[in-house]
Length: 337
Image (cartoon, rainbow, N blue to C red; front, side, top):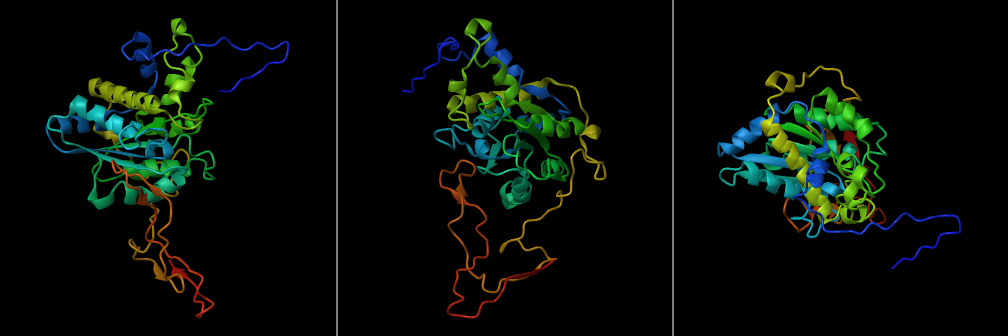
């Protein structure tokens, strides 16, 4: 227990008793509805829903930071918002249990890394996701490109030949902070569906039940940065609300969903065509001589991908210098591009 003392002249706010969250109440439904920041053009989402109902295979993919990885959820693979959202989508639209799931969240990483690893982590093994949820709203504060990498990732996904739907998800920290003011212009510009968890939960934090309070900050968050199991479920419900609204929406057409290759970016698109170079996927325009960097570091950060609880190594196809120059000639690493 922690006990706090106030000096004379200061008053503490009244304690708000935490009660079980009533997910059938009108207040709860209103809270979830406030998460729909922008419907945008729902055409691509509706196409995925139609495909699902027809019994064809549909893939939902999620890329982001630690919240997408599932931090705060226990167990991390089945209680995270991504898996819960996938479950709700399948329950609502699937005809034959024909929805596939890709989770590609890496803790502590921004869209600067997301746009580099998208091909490897989301499009791996020839995957062609129908819906891609992008969640970097609390990881991009230190992005030196100020959104250029974020928009580059968005454009990269929108320009894929099979035209997947792109959803921008804005998660939130316990201090009600995220970067949706910086990043949402990208969504408005490309008419993308946007979901703001901050818009849903933050306004009602601290309110008593009779004034519209639904869930306390303590109930929603596991720590300062990550949602609890209940918080992850509410995030999934916010995405589910978008899917339901998109299904009922007649707005948007195929023409306005297509991103023109030469259209001027909002924040920048300098990294739209960046490729990852490693031992496994070498670009034909790169000539690499590893020299004394002939080892491989197998102890790099690992994350839980998809439903797997066994962590997958990040960037396993690397070049490692093992410090053996004392017993042999040191040969530098060189690359021509």
